[in-house]
Image 1: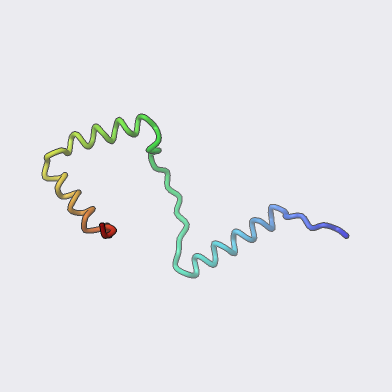
Image 2 (image 1 turned 180 degrees about the horizontal axis):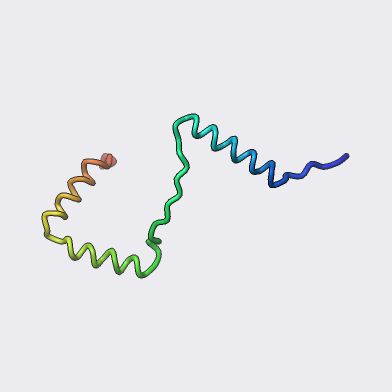
Length: 75
């Protein structure tokens, strides 16, 4: 009995079908590179920017936006 092996073409076909299925439901594949928050440089830069905002009107505006946009769990 011969065993069937997955070939790259079969995998590619499967991925194409998967993408087509998602697209037909109004979804779009999006790949984004973002800064890695585990890196020390990220922590340093985040702290620097937070210090620049501390006490400024923009800080209050940002915090109000987060409050309005996020559904906080009941405590």
